[in-house]
Length: 263
Image (cartoon, rainbow, N blue to C red; front, side, top):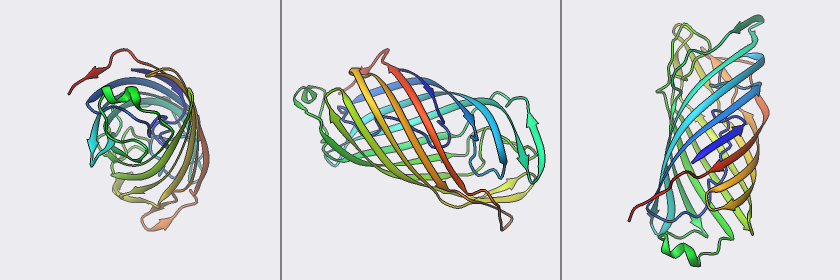
């Protein structure tokens, strides 16, 4: 699958069709590109004010649909690569950089389980399945695998772990899908921030919704909106004025190239 988007993949991760019915034993391999602009960062904990950034991200995603306790579920792995340019203020001093060095971002691992309206069925069973309401939950883990240097303010990696539990739903109406989700981001500390300082971040609360139109199975377009609140940062025990209240938007077009089924 190939995807193109305009939005913020690294921060709020506005991914459509997270809660949908998929037959068990299906493997997905996707490549995508997104561009984000405005007050966006690879790491939302950085205590930067007045940020004006443009970030390009390329990612590879592998997913496999499985059955879990009789319900449909999906395992996902996402590996991003990013680059960008920006300008802003750190504690009253202006800074700017021309571009990120080329390199990998933090690896993302996810388990998604549909607990309502989406039983575990194989490909043959999809012919009689009529999707209406689906509700589910997911857990995403962001591992500190990206490029990171403690003497730089802006890095491709965050040098910390992130956990994001989420609940969501989808409602199918013909070729249209209405989706919504709520999640909380929990962050471990970065104990090597700018040469040995300790950077902590409080919880970040996110709401998001998508409207999806499917041309045919696997081929769809989506418009998404996300709202985040919280995530105040603390440097060496001192809270900073970095409480986040922001919006994110995503447009995506996805086209299937190949799909592999195994039983």
